[in-house]
Image (tube, rainbow, N blue to C red):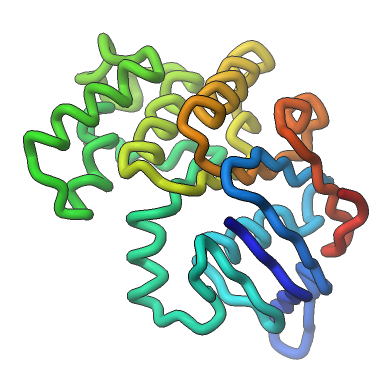
Length: 222
């Protein structure tokens, strides 16, 4: 599902060059749940942004679901994200003026999914994350854990092959964070999509099949 070969990412600020990733090579099998762990600034978010096609490597090759991200046009990358990749962020990224139901429906609308199918799938996803009774509430009316569950429902509504989760429990207490991780693990097993989870927490990483450790932009352990 994911292949990175000798991936480097260098950011430049004027004359200063900062190496975020330095020669990372990694493969992730379809259906595998992999946690990328490391301290802040080690390159976790950069890695996920590259796999999502939100950024491009300075050097190296990245394949996702058979697509060469380093050679694809921006339009092809946008289509890949819409149809094959779901993304869950630390701060939810829900649109505040939309209800939970409308937030989950949004990627399906953008994909041109027929309206009757959207209604059915949104209801199914909200029921899966146990939030159907809260479907018509706005984000400010939901708890942090509920907002993250809405974000997960939104990410999974298009039926992606890959879910990228960037510190999904970083803004939650241990109880709510544990519930979100348990939900991701359960859905990963039930639906067999691939999960790449970035976290600084060993407890969060423990739910994964496999743990990859980054330090200073390099793969320290796998």
